[in-house]
Image (cartoon, rainbow, N blue to C red; front, side, top):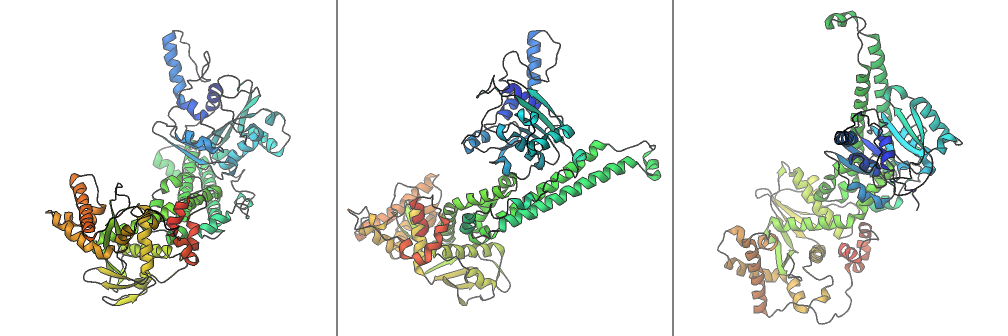
Length: 632
């Protein structure tokens, strides 16, 4: 696709930057390409052809060395930019944009197609070299999106000299009221990547709070709704993430209306402050301040205060709107507490994006594409937590890939496991962290069983008052018994098959077992299946090898602890040796099967009726291996 990519030369770039009259705060380049406009500025316009100076260069110095130093200082005028937002339609250029470093500042890519961006309210300057075929449309879109900002743009001169469309006519009207235009020749001939001899128009527009109040409304004509009547809905994303199809549009509509209300409030407040200041002070105030009737407040301070007030409101609304998306039922109901926190840890980056329907769907698509990895982390995290809570929950077996970090495989006991450290209020009401952990158990076991509808899990048993100390209570996947004095919960699996599915899932992820069990010989399969019977002999041998404290004699610590110290490595090897000694005594020799007896029937097929919804969690572009892991 031809995006009409004509990078701006250094001199033209300098002319564009020179138009800005206000201090630079937050600059946006909405047709960024590879970032030439910003690169020229932060590199002090080093690419200027010999003999050319920046437009603001003024000096009567004739001595060459002094003139050279003065020239460099003049060129460095725009090197201290602090915040830049890029929009670029070609995704191949995004990595180049993100690689730009500015001193003590930040660079963000906030979107793709600038004409779909729906707000630039926090931007103070817009500098753009848009596609020539749609230059007027891009400049007008920037004007509509900014709140209190300057615009410097370079477009095809024909757009101004021949105002034959409504867009061109409107742009000419804005230039007449709020800006200037200068026509320039040969700006894409020297010091440029792509040459064209088209005449250009250098446009400057100043949209200040005082001069444009209530003239061009950010959402007039209901930009809130024009693009939200079904065309923008991504049905596959809504279906995959189980969110209502109008959720994104409804959230954006609330955001847009709140922004427009805030804008009007700040504009009217500014007008009031301006007129109030124009009237001056009453007699008591004059006497208190010791001034006469000629005293007036500074109008520029009123404008800056009003602009700052709106930007603060706008940023707060944007954070709230993104928070609604992040904390939607998708993340609350589907993800574990750990996985949700992992997503929320990126909130700072997400908040930088403009809150628009395309950006929201872009974020949700990213979540959808990551669901396989998210769920994998979620299952493994729960597995590790159960193992680490008590070594009595674990059985061991020799790992399939002994050269991996995990030389010993682990399984959660199928019939019963115990989790200590639970804290409840009176009446067996769960404290927050305990509730979150039990909720994770419900989510993971429901996921592994392919259940997507609500069920009465462990959390429900506590929250509904069914649990009393010492009594056995039945839930969907477990009978549980809570012991208040010890703060422990005993879990008795009602479906050992789901526990086995959990063990096999983690085993495949970590290469403790082969992707298909028939790749291993009968002895490997035997020691895996009989791990609960064999584990006591492993542990007895292991504890006899160490004279250290109980901590070092804990086989779970040896199997999954850190490997950075010599003691850790030695204790892991002692556990491996203990397993191999027991195997030698029993005549077990683990290894690869000499030949496969046939392709194993995947759990996805065996349990297709139950697991089918999990296909949602593994999009079509994921590998077959990830699909099998999710299904297994």
